[in-house]
Image 1 (tube, rainbow, N blue to C red):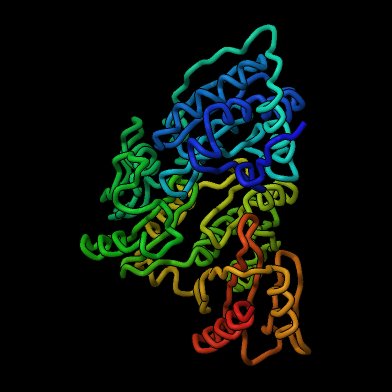
Image 2 (cartoon, rainbow, N blue to C red):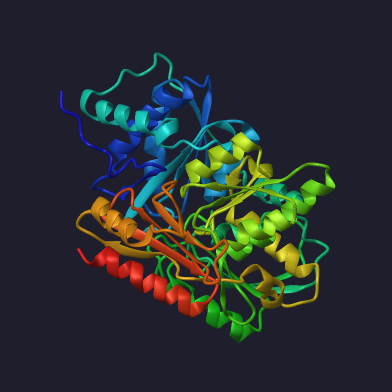
Length: 472
């Protein structure tokens, strides 16, 4: 029997595709069954938590997944509209596996899913997602045998519990008054910010004046796509921070598990600087508790991250890019915090999962506990110059990588193949730079990141590496 190839839909970290084409309700139903057979039943679980974001297709896909889950005799707890970290909170607090229906920052035509085991433990290629993919393909062709007794479906509102939980982790009631512009991009932060930082879920008022931008939930994203990695999607926020004389701006992605920061001057803050700031806060808290802190960072983060955290007597560990990798390493090493260049921030006290809201609250707490503006507070955490991630379409990824290796891996530089190719000309050199090239998981792309101690050096290395990558 020939089964469909679902590798373009069910990827290394999550599930994502165009609704009505790669991702239909029939496919979602089969994924629900496969999730139960590959993860839920082997783990001995009795129920699954299901939530969805604001995309128009979300309720239908969530219902289809629930049909697949209950057909196998497993109960479903529906929590409705939620951010991805809201789903992780429900998974952690209820000690149940979960399915989040979301395409994160992708355009409106897409939807997808993020799967987790109980306590928000990630499901990736090496931890069950490959088996989910294989079973889904089989069930789409062969069908499946339903359980003799179907599971039940109940509804539960967990938004207030989520907000209260975060407020315990990072208390904000004692900070100085702050004016905060938030760009929700018509996505899930428009639902969660009023509940967590405001009073919409019945929590007490905080000394925070929220200036809302695009809080109306609309999965067509009429103002801009919910992808703050793209600089054009931050321009409205930058202008609004200046217009309102705000202390800080916050931009969340579609499912609000990532948060980008804009300072009072309207300048975008590097996620590496946020990793330094939050990592140092968590490191200090660990030392106060008599523990030796471990902080995870992926290999694209600035050199400033391990330098500053090691100076603060933290153990730093480099991880591969991708949430399933960093979550697994966080749990294995009992790391207190983890940060990625893409503005995913992970917390031991949040079941080692990522939360854009929790990261934002740490920044607000740090800013509000002293009198300096944000730009001054963060200046020391952003000492180097980075290129940002630059994608190049190439005919042969392996050949392009080999050209870079031949051109730049010479005497006097360090290199490794931990995640793509990293070349470093830093320790012991007056001219300090490093770069990483790594392939996309799904496209014929090479991704380049360069950092240097000086702007002109970064630009020269960036242009030299790009010329080699693109010469084919």
